[in-house]
Image (cartoon, rainbow, N blue to C red):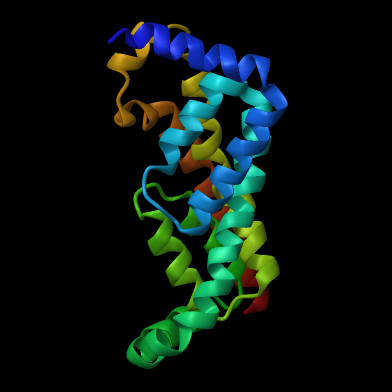
Amino acid sequence: MNYSLIFENFFNWIEINLYFSIFIFSIFILFYSMFSLPGLILFFVFSGFAFGIFISYLICLISTTIGCFCFFILSKYFFNKFFKKKFKKYFNRIDDLIKDSSLEYLIIFRLIPGPPLMVQNLVLSFLEISNYKFLLSTFIGLQPIMLFAILIGNKINNLANVSHFKAKDIFTLDLLLILLTFIIIISTRIYFKKKIIK
């Protein structure tokens, strides 16, 4: 089977049907993130490869934020009571800890690479946070990893590179420095906020 020809035909089809492709991909990302399935970051890489940086960034950011928010609402409705009863004291402690700077803590939580999206969304749905704070922390917190994955995808210029690409290539020193900078800025904000309250 000639994989190069298949890829070439596939990306030619995307180019010819660009607006339809963007629409389909946006819906796909929305539902994928709504169910918080693993491997979303690979689709960010694909979008950078298929649609370029700017369009991919808009598609992924908007669709992922809306999808995660849908999961957040559904989880609050279906799972909240069950998990709250079992782990009430732990969630109460977390709520007490973050109450003065909840938005900043939520953004840091989103910035940390590692916890699967489903775990992140589930944990956040059990805390006493507003819809607004969930949306804003998701919108801001997912941007660095998302943008970096899109940039990686955009740098893959030929099909030969795809076969050598690994998911670990996303987590480079550049990304870690970006994340560390975000975390330091937000942590400093939390520190001074708590000092003012005291």
